[in-house]
Every structure is written in C-alpha cells, then in structure tokens.
Length: 122
Image 1 (cartoon, rainbow, N blue to C red):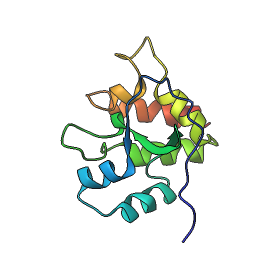
Image 2: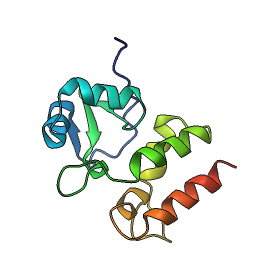
Image 3: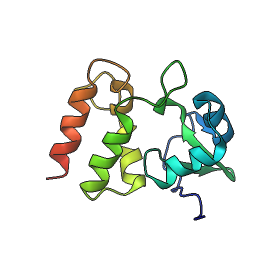
Image 4: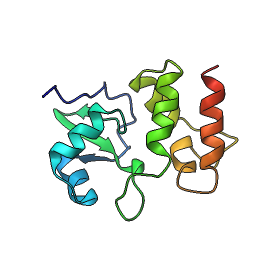
C-alpha cells in the first residue's frame, strides 16, 4: 500500500481541519477508506503540527463530502494545478462570490465554482 498523500499546509491557521479518524467517523467508513480517497485524489490532506488533516469545509453539515468536491479537484488537477494551488484557490477570498470558492460549494453557486475551475484549466 502506498503512502498517504498530503501537501504542505498553505492554509490560514484559522482554517479548521478534521483528522483522518474524524473524517472516517463522519463518513461511517474505516480510516483506510479515507486514505484511499486521498490516494484517489478525491480529498486533499495537509500536515499541520505533525498531524494529517482535511479541511472541515470539504464536508457538509451531516459530515458527508461536498457533492461537487471530488469532481472539482479532478478538474483542477486536469488543468495542471497541484494540491497546494488547489487549496489556495479554494480558500482565497473572491469578491464575486460570497466569501471563498469552498464556501460557495455549500450553496447555490457550486456550478459557478466548477465553471470557473474549468475555465482556469484552459
């Protein structure tokens, strides 16, 4: 089994992270399944203070992964973005959205975020 992928923590320290065991508990799966989601690039983890974590905003109020997130990550990877760049883009304030792209994924602007990600890749 390959190592668990993670990237540099480029996020503001105020961005809340969930440890992998907490992600597994919320999703109702084993930690090894969360590790596989990371290897499959459906989630992105960072190492903060020696502990792997996934941004809490990647999940909805029930603890499930945001519907659009895996596809958005795939679109950005296909456009040549590295994990650190994806995180920076997702968590950067955008005046044309209510907050950041990752916050917009929680509302009615998810399709707009996907459209912008597709446009950035070309």
